[in-house]
Amino acid sequence: NPYFKCNEIHIDYLLLSFVNSEKRIALSASMGVSELPKSLEKRYQEELCKYSGISVRENTAQSYLERILEKKVNLIIDPTLMLSREEWNRVSVKPKRYNNKEKYILTYFLGEKSKFVEKDLRYFMDLGFRVFNFCDINDKDMFVNGPSEFVYMISHASCVLTDSFHASVFSFIYGIPFYVYDRNDAEENMSSRFETLFDLFDLHNHYRKNVNEVDIQECNYEKGYMQLEKEKAKVIEFLENIINRKS
Image (tube, rainbow, N blue to C red):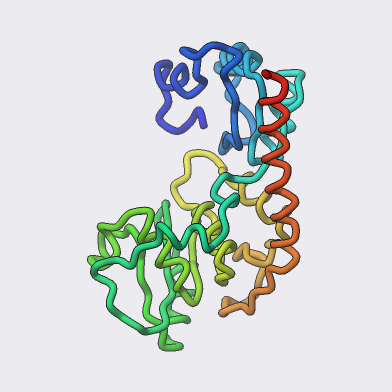
């Protein structure tokens, strides 16, 4: 994402300009934006054209890069989706300060919570749910935690409220109800990765604007899980094609 605190050094590093061309592969890269600023487009073209293979996780990135590079760009899933919930359970760890057996709502927001989110949280609290705010400095039980605790708290939640792509992904993996909200304070619109996720796995009803009332949904991800197996196969095929081409 060229808008995410990038300077020339970062761009060279992230585009692997220091690596031999034949060794460069982009596996499920995310641009986070629908197109590059014109001032950087040529720089990206020069480096990305040297790659042995390029795959991205967003529809918009795929179509845009294919246009400016004039080469095939594969659309594949985020690598976190390649592992099952049983495999993720191996790294899952209960937070040290979490000893509560109450049913809870988990929030994980990279931007500020909107009044819309606060209204929904009050609804859940009125129903008797406790609320944990992961990685929120105002929540002493949840602030100092890492990825292992992140997986644990999502996997045991009654519902997840978030503006985070990966909180959505892990909710899907674990079959947990979740709602996605537009991100406050985002410098650029980063919704393309969500749109691709929703399209692939039939998750559009989890986008908060698409429902009238917030509630604990009964999740039926069966259709999405069937598609997930097909998408996993595409990742393996992408890598095998590149490896076989080199051998």
